[in-house]
Length: 260
Image 1: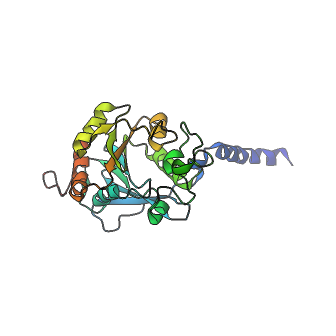
Image 2 (image 1 turned 180 degrees about the vertical axis):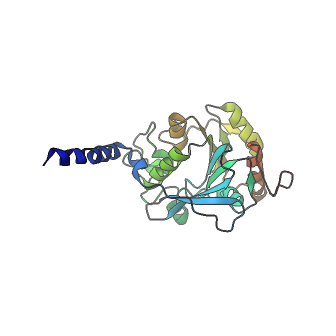
């Protein structure tokens, strides 16, 4: 091969080497935001990945880009469906003001479809993250290795790009807001949603959870919010407006005409 041909190949080889060294969860293509589909609150939506069985994981974009960036997530565990009502209320409601809001109502679509905690591989998505991961089995099966699951990689890729200031991860049935690195903020969330605070220890100690990974890797703050096993519907209906108020936001045509 001539020296000129070798020189032409060098940039290409370098680019391929850089791509190979990227973390696996960042290599997959980033799906573009698509236009809203008739929902006044929605300014766009994005398929952030697919489940084991090929179901779409969708993030809905609401509010005003450039404002405080917040992500709300529910149904990480497919048998914890109640908080999804809160998130879908926001997606299907009036326009959101003064907040850059991303909403992922169904993190684990296979688990939701089959009414089970785990994904279709039998892995607990909230034990599969790479921070303080250990091999666990049973109800909290952590998978064969960190980020082994497509749902985990999709969420890691999404959060790594969005980098929200705050994540609220909604679960059931422990009826408490976790009180961790930012107790003052945790207490504010608990007061806003009429929930107590508690140190949520995952039974004994937490390993490989989404909130632990995000709080270790980024400047923002991820917080677990647990509703009870059967929260009153009135409480769920009131929650969207309370969450927006927590961040100084509202929804409706203008300030003072908010809708619940």
